[in-house]
Length: 52
Image (cartoon, rainbow, N blue to C red):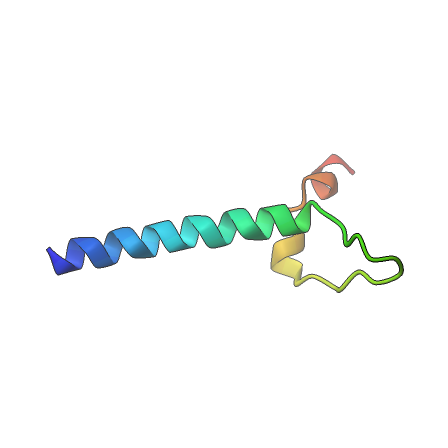
């Protein structure tokens, strides 16, 4: 039972983290003049990169 709960929570956390990274890769900072650099792995999730 505990093992199943642990596996479920790890799967859920990985989906949430990946979705967050995709959202971050496809958005920009609304503050003028500052956009932090994203890691290369996150940039691979960027939808605009695939269109170029």
